[in-house]
Length: 158
Image (cartoon, rainbow, N blue to C red):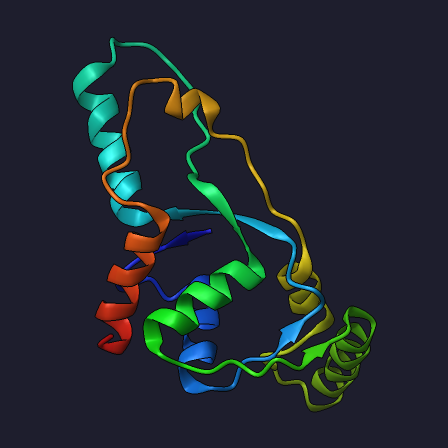
């Protein structure tokens, strides 16, 4: 998952839910998510352009360490100064609700923000190896926390 200032993807949607106080954790939140701050991706590409010899190479780039969902929520709520409800929805109940929204979406022919697929994706482990990128000699200019801080400041004024 790529995140950063101006990105309106899944990470922004999660950050926006936390910022608006409409967030509830589904499952235990121990699932790790590999994420990349856009400032580090740009710096990595510039590093490759400036230091690598011609040829084809394939890299997975993700910033480390991987955050668990509850870590990401904790860091975000701390930076924003928001209190997150401690009530967690069990995974099975979240999936049941997702299926209910799937049926409602089918009946109304409208795309809804909650679905069984979104619940599965939210609770899934999406962890990738970026050791080849890090062994290239590249040093990310931003930590995950700094990238998150910069994104939240840009998007929510904190």
